[in-house]
Length: 68
Image 1: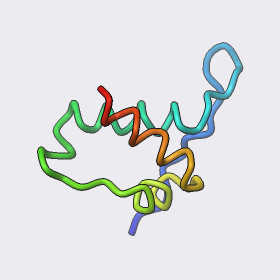
Image 2 (image 1 turned 180 degrees about the vertical axis):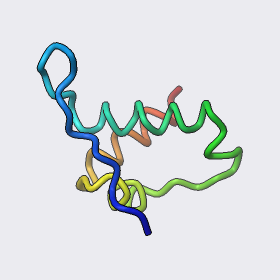
Image 3 (image 1 turned 90 degrees about the horizontal axis):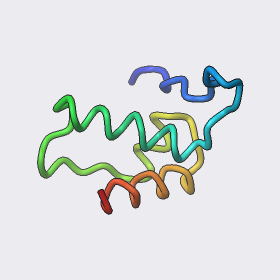
Image 4 (image 1 turned 60 degrees about the vertical axis):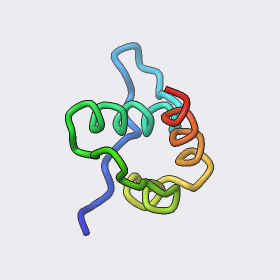
């Protein structure tokens, strides 16, 4: 298992994006690059552990992905 991705970094404007927005952006980019294939299952527990966040931000990011 690798170390959690670092997602709490200030943007150029100096603000810190909400956790669910960062998790969503990273996952969406990975899907676009083909890291996650059709039918791959991403669970909120796996996402939360990978990114070092609690389950609510992971759940919100996954819900947003399912709407896209």
